[in-house]
Image 1 (cartoon, rainbow, N blue to C red):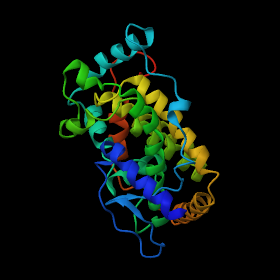
Image 2: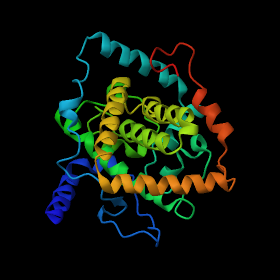
Image 3: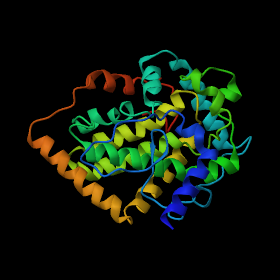
Image 4: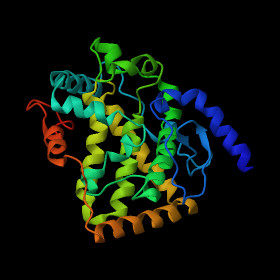
Length: 286
């Protein structure tokens, strides 16, 4: 049965390759038991296909043409286009990177600790595996609605032009990046409650980076967060995940006790994330 589930998950990759196309192989810490890869660089998640939340049943349909919600999406998109080549735009480009080890670094400043295979192997693996679960959770709705992305509608380049060919084939609604970013934020806030506000703010900003990048509408990101939260709720019913969570918590406590801090330029990151147009409509004005 376990082998059958793995095969089903691998077969499903035919439909979700655009989301995972940026993921590349990373070395597994030798102290950890091997975990199967669904394809090079993509570890099997914790959830069985049956346990992955059904985003089509969870989220509302995307805004209809001419609706107030669509008008808000477009108004926000017009404002973010003024950020092209700005520090916030460059941060959005960095946030688009889902390959490890770069992806593990997203929350280093918010956590104020390093995240890598040497110092936090348990957490590193937890992030890789939960990425798979949160990402897969968005695809029932993505494949059903096949919403066009902003750069396809407004004719303006995204912050990742090299990814546009496959993004054109990957539904915009809901946002996979927003789902996994919020899932990671919820997990990390539980692991390090003393840093929860900074962690949750970074998780929110990670999703907003997709709006800034011109690859998602605001409503894509809002519903993506809902899917990410649903994935975390499902993960908490998985014994393997809860064991990994406990192991990761021990790593962070030990690092904090040893006086470790993030080695990133956190002041530059904070400045980039706060650089938004004054006219930016809610809820993209933070």
